[in-house]
Picture 1 (cartoon, protein in one colour):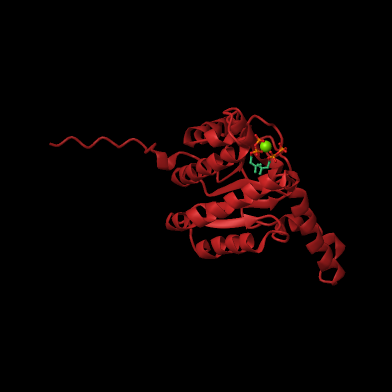
Picture 2: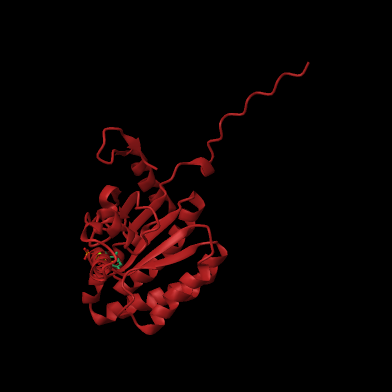
Length: 254
Ligand code: IPE
Ligand code: IPE
Ligand code: MG
């Protein structure tokens, strides 16, 4: 009589590895990466784009639902004009060079931040990226460009104030939930994990509202050296955290 087949062990493959739904990254340290090598800062930014490509691929492979990347802050305009030009040029290059590939990989691109004040060609490219990929249902890549959280919150407050002024809403309608609903990517979950590279330990006006209960992981790696292993390390750290959301029940990550 044939032996009954042994019960297969529960699958513990990569596909079932628990990952946070939403990871946000402050990509910092391009300039210092370059300086440490005697290279111009622009070379650090160029290498940073390569790290971004790899990270988007890794995030998709790992089954992360939403990846938000901080590409250019509202305050980065205060850098020398040549560096601002470089950073704008790199965004254009990234979209022109990578959009087709992102689309093929089923990535949906969304952009948060202030569109006003951006050069028309940049605005067109951002719109094109969103338009082309709008029906994709793989990784959602949120590009925070010309983004500042305080400005985003102020814009949301303006929308609510306009509703009150128009008589469409009582002043009591201005609640935390209502404000949250008027932020740039309000339909998506808050980040579970925010990673900042380069050893700096601050948010620099990134997702201040949405970060209320995010786990923060700071890694010493300069952004151009960030790769799949660094991402996995940060997620492993996240999984060791206990998320309580103000209650008493500890919830591990994800
Ligand atoms: C991050 O690297 C890229 C942007 C802020 C656009 P930095 O340019 O801030 O590099 P460091 O912090 O000066 O090393
Ligand atoms: C935050 O980095 C902005 C981006 C990564 C786009 P910064 O380098 O601008 O932040 P600070 O000035 O060190 O706080
Ligand atoms: Mg920096």
